[in-house]
Image (cartoon, rainbow, N blue to C red):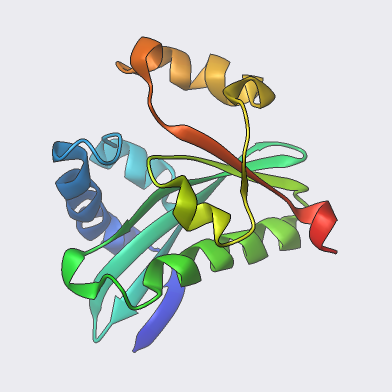
Length: 155
């Protein structure tokens, strides 16, 4: 099987390994295995011949706001459009849930801009800042760039 599917519990360890490999390099914020299990329903995986090549999650924050999180593609599978497909699947999921805005915090805003996102200020996401960012070790020195896609503009 090749393609995107919803993650299941048996995928948690592979998801953790992929995310951890990027967290160690400072490219992604770390996620505990426990957190992955707790949020397994948020994750999509891109599978190639039984191996997870990429992951991404959609986390609902509020009635009209969701975040794309934990986007990672293994190095040997990069450049094949897997990241783009995962983000597009998360956007489809957000639409089907009735979410109006999708955002991400990223070190690579150009990737998201190619998908229609625009750079904004973090102050547009107080739910994120005061529930999650405040607890991050990088809170005072965060260099992630917030990007936003307004799904109502695309209707």
